[in-house]
Image (tube, rainbow, N blue to C red):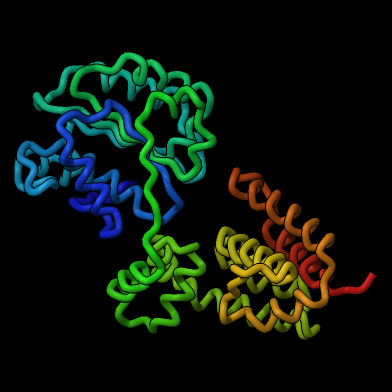
Length: 331
């Protein structure tokens, strides 16, 4: 669900000022960027700006009738389209309704705006149905697409949109912003959250709200016990079952990349403080060929879980832990 917003994230203000100062807007925009960078907030604010009757200083006024309808979630000329369930596809029937919506006259006599996210969730038939609206746009209609993975979109869709990448702030700016949002957290906690989020501040904030630091601590202690032979993989897999699988996969993928960098003595090798000793030790013991094979296996299962494949997560975790520990075994 796209949360109402009047302004974008602070690090996107320069881009926002250039965009809202324009006199003519493109019929279709594709906002791209890493998950958690702030593109949904940017898109929400831009949709509000386009719908507003009396924009104030380059932003929606939140006072006019159009803004009141939007904030109440009942604006007849604003359509939010997303999968019925997270991780599911956007189907052709939903896109056909979008096309019909854009072809109708505005009920409020102003602009009509559609926000579609995530755009890569459209199946092939849905994407082809959308092309008609992109090729034959109606006047004063705007289509705002949001995508974490624009490479998964049809090239014909990307080519008919004004693609607007939204980047990440500097680490210093991200740390300052996150500390302001989480005054009860220490600077080291905020640094770890940002590292876990790949530098994406809104993702880091979401992780904090999910109590991911406590879950991370539990996982790190479990890994240490596993490598010392103090706990069996099957037992640890059961203990980790309540932890979101996407978090576990993200962490193991990041640690695997750290191991590869440490083995290659890469200049950008930056290991999380909570795993520095473990990874440093492992990097001196394991074989790079086996590590790469493990990485391939891990990435494939990450893809399967992302596609909502019907996998037994406890059995997967047990097998993953067996393989992780076996990286240190001599052959």
